[in-house]
Length: 220
Ligand code: CDP
Ligand code: CDP
Image (cartoon, rainbow, N blue to C red; front, side):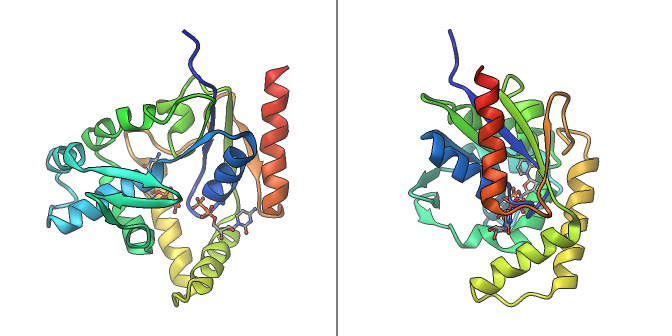
C-alpha cells in the first residue's frame, strides 16, 4: 500500500520551520504536523501535575493519557485551549528537557504517524526525517545563524506584546540547541539525503519557494 507523501522539515529553534512548513502545507493542500507542539503539550502537562522533568517513565505514562487536539491553528490539552500557554520560552526549555527521554519520545510516535493522511503531510521538528518519517519524499534541514534566529524570536515576541531581552533569548536558544543536538535518542542532525536550507538571508517567501521547487523536482 502506498502511504501519502511526507515533506519532513527539521531544524533548530526559531529557524522558521513552523512558518515555512505550514505555508508549504497550505500551498499543497497537505496536512501539517507541528511535532514541537506535542513536546510542549507534554511539558505543560508535566508542569500541571508537578512531575519531575527528569522522571522519563512517569512523564511517558502521563503523555499516553493526555487528550491532545488541534483545530484551526489552536491547540487543546484535555479540552482546554493552551495555544498561548505552550508558546512561552520557558515551556520551550521544559519541552527540550522532557524530550531527552526515550520513553517520552516513544509515547508520541503513533500520534505523529496518525497525521499522515491523504493527500499528504508536511511535518516539522527535530527528528521528522531521521526517525518518524524516514521514507519522506523530501527531507529539508532548515536553519539560520544563532543571531538571526534570536532576532526572529525577539521580533515575534515583541509583536505579541511580550517583553524579552535579545541576549537572554540568544542564551536560551544556544542552551536548547546544545541539548537537542547532543541527546542520545533522536538528536537534531542533518540526515543523509536531506537538503540544506540556510535562511539567514532569505525571506519567508523565498524559503517556501525553495521547498516547493524541491518537492516538485522530487516528483519528476
Ligand atoms: O518553528 P520555528 O521555531 O523554527 O520558527 P518560527 O516560529 O516558524 O519562526 C520564527 C520567526 O521567524 C517567525 O516570526 C517568522 O515569521 C520569522 N521568519 C523570518 O523572519 N524569516 C524567515 N525566512 C523565516 C521565519
Ligand atoms: O519552535 P521551536 O523550534 O522553538 O521549538 P519546538 O519545535 O516547538 O520544540 C520544542 C522542543 O521540543 C525542542 O527544543 C525539542 O527539544 C523538542 N522537540 C523534539 O525533541 N523533537 C521534535 N520532533 C520536536 C520538538
